[in-house]
Amino acid sequence: FHWDLSSGEVWIALITFLYVDILDCTGTMFSMAKFGGYMDERTQDFEGSSMAFLVDSSSIAIGSAFGCSPLTAFIESGAGIAEGGRTGITSIVTGMMFFIALFFAPIFASFPPWATGPALVTVGSMMMQNVVQINWKYIGDGLPAFITIIMIPFGYSIGYGLIAGIGSFIFINSSVNLIYRLSRGRIAPPNYSERDDWLGFVTRGGFKSNIPPWIMRLFGKQPVAIGESDELSSSDLCASNDTSSELKEVAVSRGHHDHQV
Image 1 (cartoon, helix red, strand yellow):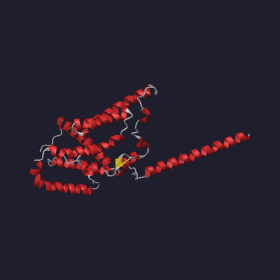
Image 2 (cartoon, rainbow, N blue to C red):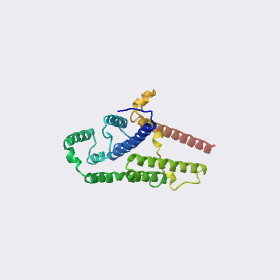
Image 3 (cartoon, one colour):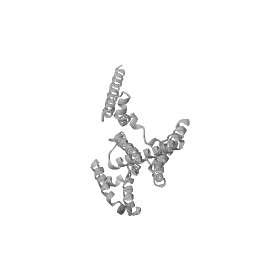
Image 4 (cartoon, helix red, strand yellow):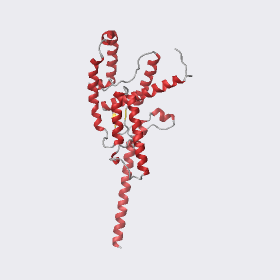
């Protein structure tokens, strides 16, 4: 074992494997969380995501040091979710089955890939139900989603599909926004007003809820408790409603006074 970071090829390989693994893990975890019904619609995150990514990265590093295959989250987890798995007991039972399978490895290795492929096809068909939630009316949302869906199977990687989708999303929406601003709103694609507000959770306070508590404490900030941003937003809404009602009362009183005069 020779550890040498002076070569540029080593850094290229590390960076390549890094972003591919990050995108693969992110796509798998968020798609599984969405499929299992764990996504928070306000923050667009799922509970325990920071610990999940930490465990995944640690497993990848430890597995690489021992020369094992990648120990990461795989899309095959959708088969367990489709059968009703929702807790950690599912993972424990799966791990026990893998341990038992070690003693029957020669038999299982003789199974052809097309014998297990139909199960993944069935899971993929069930996951396609989330496609109806894509905003197909606006090209800046629909086209990047379509490119992502197409590039994942053709690129043989979730990471490549996400790179293509994110890149096309940035290019299309940046170009549209630039043309829209230069033309002062006269040139815009169809249904531009119906585009998804992808950064809306920032203004609603959900962004702070996505930051892990230890990072907030590292910078001397108080972690945002669950539901705190909702209470703040609701209190702000009540305050704005009270203000608007007071303004209406003032306007009515002034109008009544002018009428008497």
